Length: 289
Image 1 (cartoon, rainbow, N blue to C red):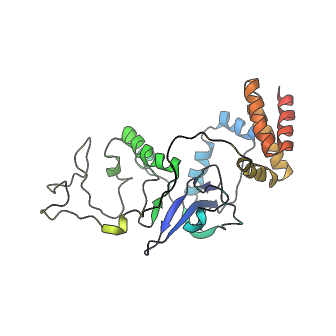
Image 2: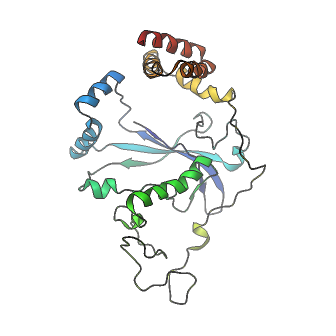
Image 3: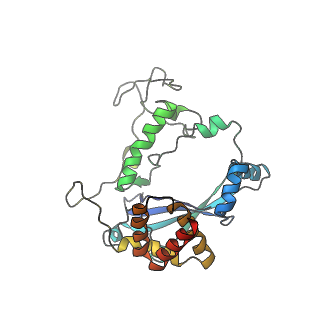
């Protein structure tokens, strides 16, 4: 399956020029799906099917890989683009901003110790390298805080010192003490500036770029507009008849279990996107009862 970054990030070059970007990982194996019936049968017979399939393929040296792609938008284009580029419910059509291949991700070995190498991994969108920066995407801003908070709760305050989470290249910092500190800096000072030959900040190269903000801040209700239904309608329309039928039946199977007023409200959303889509779901729900 493919992997899509829901958030918009900033790319910044040495001259401080900003471009916005979205990350895409496209499967080099192609996309293969289970039907709802197959997934249900496998869930009962072999709930570890997906993990086993991945582990076995790597063990056979059939290494799965994904091509990393970027969509890149100049900063000045963002203000006038037809959709809010920081809205995680919207995509950037490839006709506007084509995918640019930049590399490949390959899984070429299985973990030797699942707990040490998988269970203790602590990913976060706040882990960025110079040249990649977070944007004002509000959900991203929340995740910059919530992911590290979760790791501190799950793995302890010094989770970044665990072998699987430590930087490959040695770095210096002023992080000291706390529960289960593994690398505590010896007798080095824990403040900067200092006269003890302690590490110094890397300077402007690792600072974030500034951004001009206009308008009022506050809490505002979200009002749905016609634009909010254009992309779902397009997604439904570009699928072949068989894929459309599977989608309709999958939605209907779950939605028919909802309370009547919820079913009615949800069908109105589908109807605003595509009247035929809503009609087919309604008919499929009637058959499912």
